[in-house]
Image 1 (tube, rainbow, N blue to C red):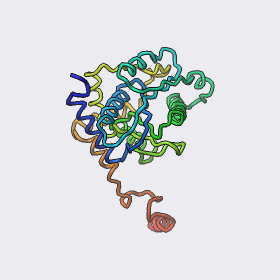
Image 2 (cartoon, rainbow, N blue to C red):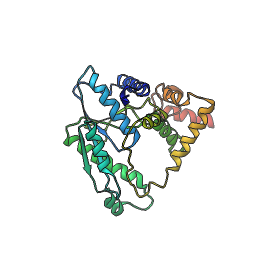
Image 3 (cartoon, rainbow, N blue to C red):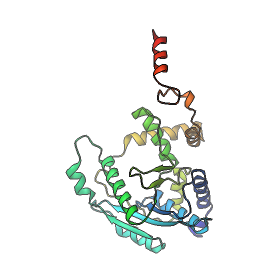
Image 4 (cartoon, rainbow, N blue to C red):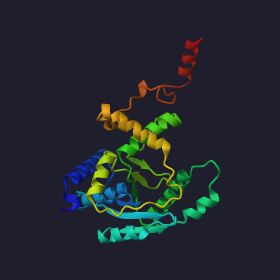
Length: 266
């Protein structure tokens, strides 16, 4: 049985379709650059969007885009062969991140964050060159929740990942169609597939993001008592009630409220 005919794939496709409808992620005439890293998430995203494209009520185009970071050992050949075998339109871009990071990385700066910024800049440039107005990223539900908790616990702010947002350059729209899909479903799908999964060969990949792993363990532990905790947290992000939040920049908050709070403390 083909991957796209399985019940799990159909369930994931339905969740992606719901996200597309809820957030207007895809519109008629869109040309979408799908960021394909060679991991399970981006392969899932590419296959689901391609299947939806075939039966969509509005026309849109996809082009798989990979940014080769230039790290020794990156198996670009496996990725290209996979994309060719499945008939995907694609573009592979060589980017010498390895030398740039070694030269420009300042002490105390995150290697991964710096690499991510470089990759994002290349994606924007490629989207322009390929005539794409949108860039699709493979972040799933667990990524959104973990980012929410990381921002709350370590950065003191209420922020996660938006399903649809204007890119930093102000020209492209970033979309995350897997926002309703749990990571465990993607892992299961990858186990049923023949995805040519490859790593980026990053020299610091062995140094696991401890903070994100901590959030992952926290959510996993909570799910033992609250099975629907991931979707509950996502619903909370969709059900923001500003008047019940102590943010002084929200509507109605300002100098008068600050003065009132100050007077109460006296």
